[in-house]
Structures are given as C-alpha cells and as structure tokens.
Amino acid sequence: MQHRLGPALPWSEITPQRLYLARREFLAGVGATAFATLASGTALGAALTAKPGPFRADDKPTAKEAVTTYNNFYEFGVEKDEPAKNAGTLRTSPWSVVVEGACERPGSYALDDLIKPASLEERLYRHRCVEGWSMVIPWIGVPLASVLQAAGPTPGAKYVAFETLYDTAQMPGQTRRVLEWPYREGLRIDEAMHPLTLLAVGLYGETLPNQNGAPLRLVVPWKYGFKGIKSIVRIKLQDSQPRTAWNVSAPNEYGFYSNVNPDVDHPRWSQKTERRIGEFRRRDTLPFNGYGEQVAELYAGMDLRKFF
Amino acid sequence: MTRRTRDRIIYAVVWLACLSPLLCLVWWGLDDQLGANPINTGLRFLGLWGLRFLVAGLAITPLRGWFGWHGLQRYRRTIGLSGFAYIALHLLTYIGVDQFFDWQAIVKDVLKRPYITFGMLGFTLLLPLAITSTNAMVRRLGGRRWRQLHKLAYLIAPLGVLHYDLLVKSDTTWPWFYAGLLAALLGWRVWQARTRRVATRPVSA
Image (tube, rainbow over all chains, first blue to last red; front, side, top):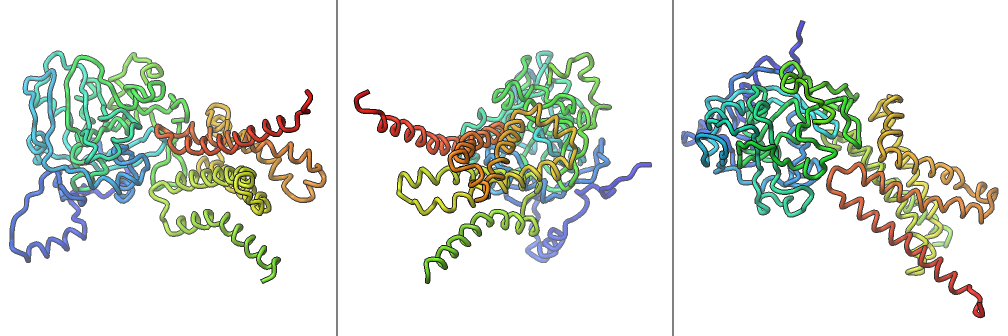
C-alpha cells in the first residue's frame, strides 16, 4: 500500500490564500488582463499553471519557507540565508538563453520561446545536497530533452555544457573569487536526455524565486544539488566533457558525475546519511538519491568510485 | 561604591557577556529563528563561540603587554572556561543531536575525517586545562607546573582553527581571519621570549 503524504492535487492547482484574496481585489479593479510569463521580474513569484508530471516522489514536500530561504547560490553570498536576502538585484525579465554548438538550430532564444508555458509539468523530486542535507521540492518545468530535441542535436553532441549569468552588478558574489565565474555545469548527453532531467522555471506553483535560480535552472534529482546550475544563460552541445565549477575548484572532492552515492564519501565527510530539512533524525542516503531504478543503467559497467 | 562592589559588578558583567551567546542561541531556538537547518546552525554557532573565547583568552597577556591592561588578568579564567563550555556543548550537540548517539558513525568520523580528528584532539587537550582551573588545583600543581600545563592552549587554539578551516567548502576567509589573530597573539609570545632571553644573557658571554 502506498501512502501519499503530499496532497493529491499538484501544488500548482492550490491557490494560495494570499493570491485568491488578491484576485478579488484585482477583479474589482480596472479589469486589465495580465498574463503570467515565466519570469516574474519581481521578488514575489507569479502563479504558474502546470500539469502533474511523472516520477512523483512519495516523500512529504519540504516547507516552502525552507526551500526559499536555505540556499547555496554563491553568486549572492556563501551563507545559506544570503541568497534570499541579496538576490533581489537579479533581473530575470527579459531573459534569453543562447543555445549553441553541435545542433541544427543554434541561436539566442527568449525564455518564453525556449520553454512553452503550455508544456509545463510539476515534478515532486528529492534534492540531496553534497553537504549532507536534503529537501523534497515540487518543481515546475519541462524535460531538458524536449528543449534539446527542439535544438536538433547533431552527432557531435556528446555532452551538454551550461553557464550561469556572469554580471557582477546583478550577482555581487561574483566579485569574490570563491569559485571560477561564471558557474559552469555539464552532463553527458544521455544524462541530459533522460526523462528525469528537468529544466525548471518554478516551484510550489509559482515562478522561481531569484534565490532558487530564476528564471531557469537545471534539476537532476539523482545527482548532488550543485549539479543543478541556476540562472542559465548558455546551453552548449559539444563533444568534450565540460568544465564544471566545483570540479575546477576541488577536483579530488567534486567529480564530473557527482551522482548521489552513500558508498563514496566526500573526502572530508561521510555521505552515508543526510538530514532532511524539517526532520530531527538523520536518514540513510539512497544510491542515486532513490532514482536508481530509472538511472542506474546509464552507468552500467562504470566504476563509480573512480567516476564519482 | 566600594572597590569590592565595583569588582563584583564588573565580574557579573563579564559573566553575563560570556553567557550571552548561549542565551541568544536558546532564545532564537525557542523563537524558531535558527533557519531551515537549526541543528547545523546551532552546532556551528557553539563551535564558533568556543573558538572566539579561546582566542580572547589568549589575547589577555598580549593586551597587558601592549596597553598595560593588567586588570584583564582576573577574567582570564572565566573567559577560558567559557571557551571550554561552548566547545563542550558543541561536541555534545554533535554527538547527541546531529549524530543522535550513532557511536559507530562517530568513531568512524573521528578516525577518518581529519577535521573531526583535529577537533576531538583539541577538545581532549582542553579537558585537563578545565579540570585544573580551580584555585585548589593551581595550588596542588604549583604555579610553575600549572603554567607549563596551560601552555597547551597554544596548541589547542590552532587545532580549533584547523578544524574550522577543513570543514569549510570553499570560502575560507573567516578561518584565515582567526589564523591571523592567533599568529599575532602567539607570535608576540615568541618575540617576547626571545627578547627576554637576549636581555638576560650575561654581558660578557
């Protein structure tokens, strides 16, 4: 018997009280019509509509307050509470993404052209940070595969490289060289095309708050959280393994793959257990963050201690 | 106000100052202000204040030398013991709350994780200093031996900074700040010892 701890409705279909009260005022007003776009352009998220997607985790979603105030986003400071305080300087609208490299339709795409609002899905995913904590987050987005397919990968597309915005005025943390800027991440093409891999534009039924990587971020639920690059401006298909920020910073500590693996410790701490935010006791970390059934075959025959 | 009353008031203020980080932590904890990961926040807070008090304790002799603030001497024990108290709470939080008495995991951590090895070594060395902090113990050991023993603080504080530096993911600004402070405080002692040796060298030698 399966218990669903979260509501059967996706979060996107529950109207927060703040919004339905605001809606009454809005309807009483001038009657102007506003369509939500994927980037809210303000600190508050705009409501997003999404259909329920597959791979819904059976775990209880982590409180939205925690998801939006406990963030690693060094572009806005290295402490967990700093992104929520400092990310207001990021302008997410207009936003465009360069798609380039080994594909048939390279170009600079406006966010709403890259991700059609009608195709949005909600996915409840577990999120495991390399530091030993975890969350469960109702993301809204589209499979990365759909965006890559639209670009038309050519045979040279063996890897996908991603880059975050680099703008020290909007991202003041980039004036300090705690990492190599801009933040870079990458996936092997089969990882990128996997149906679990999501390009997210929202969470909890709203556009992404800036501190969570607005307006567009990667979510790869079987990998450590730092693989989920935020505020993406560039996606490049290429034939060589991309540079990735944490791997450049400490290659012996953060591998290119960085699959969640309780049997391969971080050199400085154990990965056996994790603290789920909002829970008291630690819980066991699962191989591939519990998505082994879906993704283990991608790594068949590979020594995951070597390719950590 | 008599001198006695004034001293007592100052003592109370020092005590309250040493206790105030703990009171803040308890208050924030009860008020749900420790963020999404309160256990980690509390753990880091206690460890950081332990280190701060150890460094403050080591600053007293140099401050006397630089500014002639000899009155600070009488608060050194309170400050040092506060450091011990925060570090003991830090360790207890790690064992009892963070790891929830998972002794197997704890032993493995101590043996395998350099930052925990160094932290645990620092705490172990701190224990005899806390135990011999009473007047009776000072008398029993004799001033000379007591002072020799308490020179362990010169090793314990750097172990604390090392413990801190090794657990930070990439921004080591603060560990380096404490390392710099310690270098100044310990460097001053080395310099003092050398000049004293030069001064006491027989002139004819």
